[in-house]
Amino acid sequence: MSVVAMKLLTIAGPLEQFDDVVSACILDQEFQPEHAVQLMEGIQGLRPFPLSNPYTPLLRRAQEIMDQMKVEPAYAPFQEEDPEALPGYFDTLAQRLKDLEERRNQQRRLLNEDQSVARELSHLQGLSTHLEYLQDMKYACFRYGYLPRDTYDSFQSTLNSNADLFFVPTNLDTRTVYGIYLTTKAACEQVDSLFNSLHFVRIHLDPAVRGTPEEAIGDLEKLAAKAREKLAALDQEERAFAVRETPRLLAVYSWLRYHNERYNLRQYAARSQETFYLMGWVPEEALADFTARLDAFPACSCVADHPRELPGVAPPTKLRTSFFGRIFRPFLEMYGLPNYRELDPSVFMAVTYCLFFGIMFGDLGQGLGLALIGLVLARWKKMWLGNIIACCGLSGALFGCVYGSVFGFEDILPGFKIMEESRLLPGSSNVLVLLLLSVALGIGMLCFVMVLNMINGIRQRDYQKIFFGPNGLAGLVFYAGLIIAALSTLVLGVNLFVPAYVLPVLVLPLVCILLREPLSLLVSRDPAWKEVKLSEVLGTGFFELFETLLSYLTNTLSFMRVGAYAITHVGLMMVVQMLAGSGNLVVIVLGNLFVMGFEGLLVGIQVLRLEFYELFGRFYDDGGIPYTPVKIDYTARTGN
Image 1 (cartoon, rainbow, N blue to C red):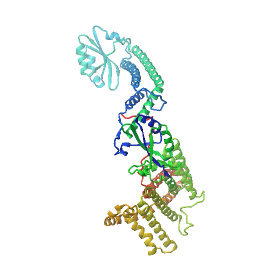
Image 2 (cartoon, rainbow, N blue to C red; image 1 turned 45 degrees about the vertical axis):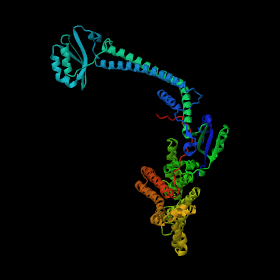
Image 3 (cartoon, helix red, strand yellow; image 1 turned 30 degrees about the horizontal axis):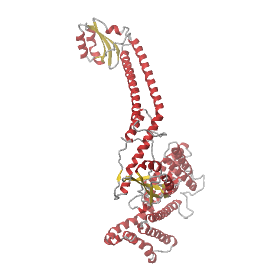
């Protein structure tokens, strides 16, 4: 349960070796860079590197070609490339893809035209006359098209009685009437005007169409089939082209990605006339490996500084936790990473979360059911929450053995029966015992997190946290002393509320909490304690002290929900058994599933609330900076 120790390294060397040092020691290694220009501010002659990255445009061009070829970014082994030759390589690929696309578009256009003409001719099926005869008549005009059905129905008699035209409907539906009309050359213009007024839309047939409509449609379908075959061949040609060129393209892309990331590290470096400077964080455990790599560059030097020696520089946080702690890491990150000089509470959270959940959801059968669901979600759905559900389910199953509860049935196993009379407190039920034990658990947890807070204060050299804060030594003495005095008076009959006990154990800690600001400055030998105004401290301190006392009470009583939810679980299962009557299996199964989902969700939320508000708030500051060494992600995309 700790944060990995860090060292801040300052690397200096000849300018011409910058790229080689970055390749050997920085990229894909345990090194998080810092902005050297800012950290070395005030040193004469230092300036930043130029930041015009020549690899970025080429990398974007490579990604554009990969998108056109439907190739996902990925790492491929690469060799050194000539940047000046790459634009020509990309142009060749782009031209090849463009040619394929143009040929494909041409075939698509031919296919669409053939299909469109076939659709137009489909409304002439049944006409036995060759279309070329109709279109090439010398003394008559031939028109083909459609008009609205309601217009045709209204003027059908007019069209049939007109001696200058002959209209033949070829296809009628509810909205449109397709047909042809014939008229003389002399009356052609007049008849066209008549049909225009009836909203007739003329369809111009391709002069190349020959034969009857059925024959023409057959020919067009053959042409469409050939176009489809050519499109399929072009698609196959493009796939073969992509398969052939992908290894080379990915190698070029990986080379560009590598050099792009290497060049981008110049934004963190500083330079003088002949020397570069790089600063960054390296885990103490990886320092030996780093220096061994740097030994390959005798002209370079490296200085390792301890974080405390550089005020104003915040070391990043890299957590070292067990497998159990890593499972609950997402919950911790919701609250915030610990800062560099804090304890890592991952394992603490994992243990207490499972403990509280198990007490509140104690059932052997339902716990194993939750564990199984969690394993399914974790393994097959790859959900991080699945591992947490599995751990909580196992904890619930363990406490189900304590309660003797299996799917709500308490007559199968022996155990601590919540609804029965207590053996510990004769005349009382186990409900009261469970609530009292929950409060005792809360008292123990609050005392423990105060100890953790003092440990954090020692690591941070914060005397207010160690001695004078409400969660420091003063707060712990007051809280524990008050609990001990209350238990002594109520249980043992020994009254400790006497001046000899109250003054040093209860009053003195409250005074320290009230005056914690000037006292912490005084202990740290900070002369600023003389400037603190006692009137301001007392004016605001009394209200803060009242809030502190109230928080002790509310945080302690808040742990009663641990026992309350255990009682609620038993109550819900009693309702399910009442509804099931004499053993309705369907009601029992559905009731157990409902309780598992409903109460499991509520208990999970309530336990998280206990962790964040009652416990973390007393010892955990968070605000840590994630440790992010420079790792090249070959699947990422460069922004526009």
